[in-house]
Image (cartoon, rainbow, N blue to C red; front, top):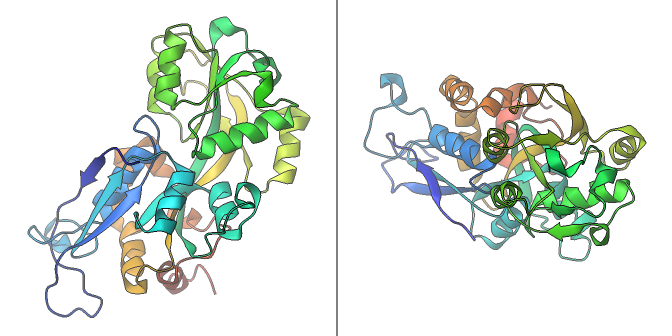
Length: 333
């Protein structure tokens, strides 16, 4: 399921909850998404910021300010649903997931109502809004969600949060997968098909600007389809984890006006089985000043990842270690 390691950060020290003698390094994997999306680069940034393996300079000497002894890595995956399943199965220590998927999985509702709830799922932090993109070829004539009827549309891969949300959006506008020529491709694959004239539109849920869409827009004329009107209001009313979202003009080449759409929150999740002290130290490292500088410089969405919004939209319990940190900061009582 996982296709690669984005980064393994290097620094010094060893993680020991007791502060005792040196220990072997600990490895901590972060499941992200496809390499063309936003999860993957953000995962690499966070892996770098929380890592501090033995062998290099200490934080106060200009080295890593991560968790002593921790080697974190970001792994490409099929996205939210796949990451939840991997955390539940123990093949990942943590991962990113959309707020809707995480909530459904932990409570056994929504798309999880016919399977066993992942009751051990816990949150570390809310990261940033994930925008629902509907990208259409300018030649397709698609200007609204309703215009997708009869068109060749990719809804993303099975196991992705994007597929879940695409179905919700289509349903709100009275459409099903039978009303379109549905394909189930990653955004970069769908973009390739669009370049070849074999795809009219595709869904992508992630922070903007998304690499695959930016590259496509630099080569082809595209339209970012708005999600507005009574149908969008119905989605917001029924699914409280959605929010209205604005993609500013100029985000993608040729985009000369703001586009209103919807978003869900990107969250960093783990299992209740992970040690409290370890997750506490990871959360603490996530929000130190060194991390802030790396996030701001590393990716446009990094600026949206702030401690002030770390608890926004979280619908599952916090991990005990993360909860301890936020309680110490006075963010929860």
